[in-house]
Length: 91
Image 1 (cartoon, rainbow, N blue to C red):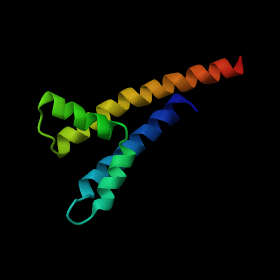
Image 2: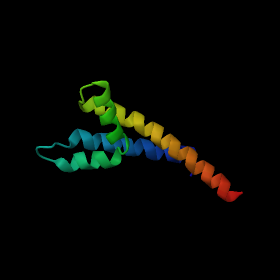
Image 3: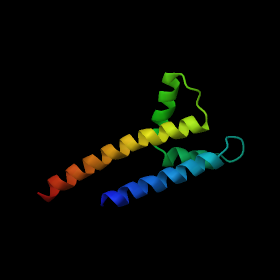
């Protein structure tokens, strides 16, 4: 898988996760929140903990920004590991 395809999948996943977070509601439609939690994983978990540790109120925008930032780090690390594994396997 090349870099453009990998980061394209990242962008689509984050977009659908963001839309799910925007449409989900704990009072009416929790399915959107569950989908957002899954699509924005692991940033959805790590971001909430980071916001709590920093004392920042966890609103919609703060959760979304922190989740995407953590996901960039995690997906980049996964990309590096996958590339290293594929180079080692082909040698």
